[in-house]
Amino acid sequence: MTGLRSRAESVSPLSERIRPGGAPRAIFAMLHPAPCALTAVAAVLFAVFASRGRTPGGMLAEIGLTVLVGQISIAVINDVRDLPMDRHVHPHRALAAGVLEPHPVGVAAALMGLASVGLAIIWFGWRAGLVVAAGTGAGWAYSLGLKHTALSWAPFVLAFPLLPAWVLTLAHPGINSIWNLWLVGAPAALAVHLADSIPDIEMDVRLGSLGLAARLGPVVARRAALVSLAAAGLVAIVAWAPLHVGLAGLLGGIASVLLVAVAQLRPDGRYVLPAGAIILGCGWVLGLT
Image (cartoon, rainbow, N blue to C red):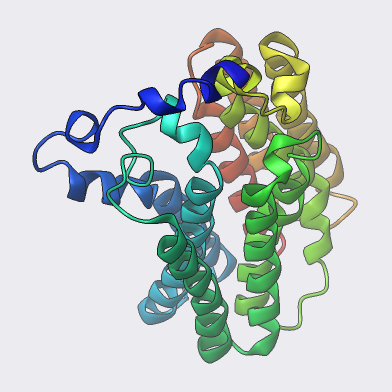
C-alpha cells in the first residue's frame, strides 16, 4: 500500500483515464448495474415463489425497485469508500477519474438508501421498512469498513437470508417459520461472499484489504465456499421433513449440492455458487409456504 501511495502524483490526468465519450459509461458502471439488478431479480423471484405466482405485477415491481435502489446505494457508497485505492488500481472508474466529486456522490448514495427504506414503508408498511433498513445498514457496514476485516462475512450472513424472509412475510404476514431460512441461508451466504471475493484476493492482499477470503487465501477460501454451500444443501435435505418444509425445499437442497459438484469441475465458475444459493433460497421460500 505504501508503494502505491508514494506514486500518488503519477496518477494520469482525466483525459488519459477516460476515453472520449466514456464518462457516461463510467458513471453507469459506478452503479454496479449487474449485481444490483441480479439481487433485485432474486427478490422478485422469491416473491413469485412465495405467493406461488399470485403476487400482482405492480407489487413485484415495487419489490424489485425497493431492492434495486437500496443495492445501488450500497454499491456507490462502496466506491466512495474505496476511492483512495481505486485511484491506483481502477483509475478508469468515475470517481477515481474525477468525472464526479465523491462528497455529493456519497450524499446522493445515502439518500438513495433512505429512499429505499421510505419506499418500503409507503408500499408495505413500517415493519417492512425496518427490515429494509436492516439489510441496507448491513450493506453500508460492509462497504464502509467490514469488507477489509475478518468480519467481512457478517453482513452477508445477516442480509442474504433477510431478503427471502422479507419477501416471504410480505406474501404471508402471519408466517412464523421464516427463521428457518437462516439454517440454510447463513452458510449459503458465506459461500456467496467467498466466491465473490476469491478473484480479487491477490489485489486485496497487495492493498492491505484483508477480508475473510484474503486472510484464508484462494485455495482455502474456495474450499470453504464449496463446503459452505454443500453444508447449506445438506441441511436443507436433512431438515426439510422435520421442519415441515415442502418438497421444493428438498429439491432446492439437492440442486445446490449438485451445483457444488459443478463448481468443483469448473474452477472459473464464479457465478455457480451464487446461482446455487439463489436456487436453494427459492426452494425454501416455496417450501415454507
